[in-house]
Image 1: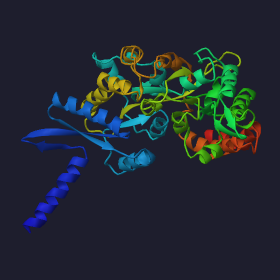
Image 2 (image 1 turned 60 degrees about the vertical axis):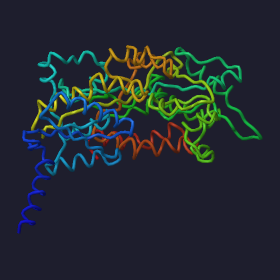
Image 3 (image 1 turned 90 degrees about the vertical axis):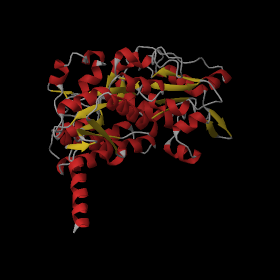
Image 4 (image 1 turned 90 degrees about the horizontal axis):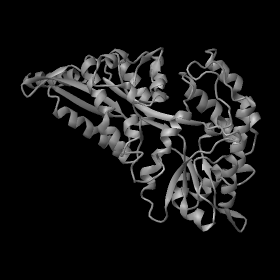
Length: 427
């Protein structure tokens, strides 16, 4: 009987802790704040050290970090919310944020921001703050921003083939010229490609096009606009017409992704985000840097973007304590560490423009250009079905466009009507 009672007590205590209640530890009441997140081992290490440091000066509050695999993150969090075992704080990125907002999951942080003299939301890039603002209410404090504005380039290959380095004022014509000069064929087969980009959005935005009619409240897909189609076709023609970019088949045949090709010096320029930096800092065989994604033919800039931050769920029993933890997670220590490791561009402007980012002599040397790039970003449509529209409707047709089976115009016409219906809630 005693063993059964002890077993029931242990089970009860476990449920008590998981429900976010106050527990007795070492003779005193201790509140437990649960933080859900995902990340690489390097990212999680920074988060843990941030929380450990905060706990030391905030006795009586225990923080439980709960890493979740990214692929199952949304479903697991929603399941836990429905089951009454939700975390207090969740890490989110700019697209997943829309999913949770649609469920009404977040606590409005506006009053905390206004009443906290030690916190100034104006220190953060307004673009990412606006993404996390709905109907005038702020639901997330940014940790980083992530324009798809980096073009990594191999200085050694540029020198070998006597091609001038790109600069931040270059355009599509410059890109194509340099990519052609840096694409090398041997026995009728390309052994070195000049350029690769995965962010098709950049070619639309820098050509003056758009994806939807209104990012905050999309009701119609605008990829059928001539400027959008022209941008998509230019991107595809880098593979199909000019043969300066590897197709998916070529990547498969080479047995490597674009980042690996860049490191193997089989790709001279690689368009991506700053998160490639930790991997590329391992390169010992050549010098490299980044340049801003090129302007379109009419001199317009435009990039897609990511970004992330921390939110408090409505279900928390400790909103005031959770607010203090969110401030720590999105505060200076973590953002400085992420910046120094090259993992992320700080969302806090004073750090982004300071010695740990713009003034740092760590590679890439030109990363400061990302602070300017933030002004030209466009976020994905703020709609709970956007990721479904992108993954199930748009991506399969664009894949056929990149293989040359259909043109950009045909690709768009094959999904545009269904995309509109989903945006309008008719499907």
